[in-house]
Image (cartoon, rainbow over all chains, first blue to last red; front, side):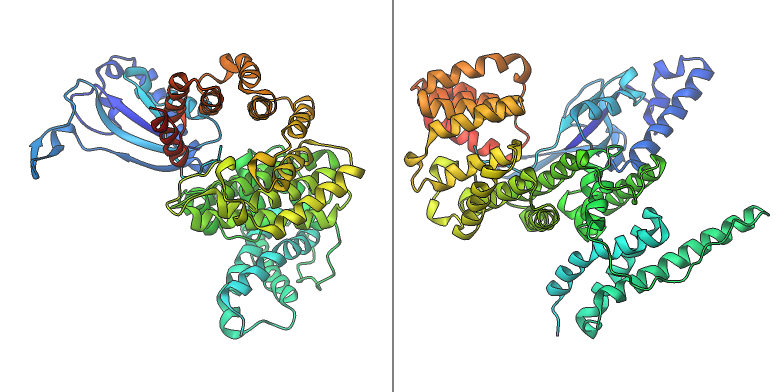
Amino acid sequence: MRYLLLIYTNAENWEHPIFLRDPRFLALPQAERDELVRQTEALHKEIMSSGELVADAALAAPAAARSVRTRDGAPVSTDGPYVEAKEQLAGFVMVDCETPERAAEIASRFPDARFSAVEVRPVMDDLGQEM
Amino acid sequence: MTTRGEVEDLLRRLAPRVLAALVRRYDNVETAEDAVQEALLAAADRWPEQGLPDRPDAWLITVAARRLVDQLRSERAARRREAAALPPTEPLDPPADDPPQHDDTLRLLLLCCHPALTPSSQVALTLRAVGGLTTAEIARAFLVPEATMAQRISRAKQRLRDSGARFDTPPDPARLPAVLHVLYLVFNEGYTATSGAALHRGSMTRDALRLTRMLHRLLPEDGEVTGLLALMLLTEARRPARTRADGSLVPLAEQDRSLWRREQLDEGIALVRRTLATARVGPYLLQAAIAAVHAEAVHPEDTDWPQIVALYQLLAELDPNPVVTLNQAVAVAMADGPEAGLALLAPLDERLARHHRLHAVRGHLLELAGDHERAEVCYRTAARLTTSLPEQHYLNERADRLR
């Protein structure tokens, strides 16, 4: 079953890995910060070598976003993200894993889950059972 | 001239034999499996143009053994460079192609379905090592990139090695249910494919049937192996009727039964009849028996619901789980009226509140009872909870009809 993990952030200064820029991360003692970086690298390696990682990408800053709306047949595009919010989408990871619990566990181990949140969304499938 | 399709079929049939021959000789599943895969790819490349060699199996064994020996040699050389002490050398000549023993395939299946592996790794490894599929084909069927599937397979082999699993342990019948489960998962992946992915996934039913037939030939007396084969045949027979041209799902009661494949139905029914009389009854055989009762009804209203209820009763005793209860509730509703079915659903609320099937079944039974308002609510809830596009479409359509 595939899940899209959406990584949100409060960071204002944009640079990946984004959690390095989170004010609450920066407030941690150095040793704890190093440990979080190490854990994140280990998590990435884990889901890659287990064959769970399907795709991932880090996104450019919301400042680089354009939102496109088509009104009365004409496209109108504005600078900036669609939803104005303090929390912005920073990146995504698609995983294919055995259970929803496993997907949630992976999500919980991103440091971003500590500072903001990681949203777990099941991906729709073409498979269907007749009822 | 041999077509590419014929070559692929032949290679898939030969794959487990070739692998078994190599594993017997070199006792190294991990490296042998890679070597066989390379030999299969080479043959798939060469044979359609150059024709088949005189002894395709011997050709594959020789080529794979050569790869394996090269690989072992270079590993050994690397070790030698690292350590001064030489490991004791074993003979590394390619094997004469000794005829593989009868239970080699069974051993391979049991190894691929080893309890140290997750179900999805068991499926991937079985399809590659026993099914003879390439990593790319398996990846396409499961909608993940080839690199992801390659990782999954290599991790599975690493786990096997770490767990000390060995090819030459005599087959343990207690591990057979894991093999049946893997074959069932492969079948379902193909059977439930509806539209976009049907091209690549649909062939999974063929692979599952092929492997289950092979297992049935090895263990003809096993009731559950026969049951699973019959269940697959009876389910696959309905495939032409289960979707409309646009890929949308048709429920069993509304299927055009003249589209059901008679030959598969007959074979499935015969297997069930023969086995019910002789073997100990297990969950797959019971599910096959239920499918056979459906298959015997020319029109949906001819269905022998009391018999289906009795079979579900047995299944619920043997393998109690919520999905069985859901199906049982539908059968009970058909035999004794919707209220009786609805009563069976009540205890499931706590466990299955976020599971779409509970709401879908309740919607169906409420609709039968004439309570269209509550039925619509249930269908909508089910539609929101399912992660299947065709099911969502079906459930919303049912809800729309009741508005």
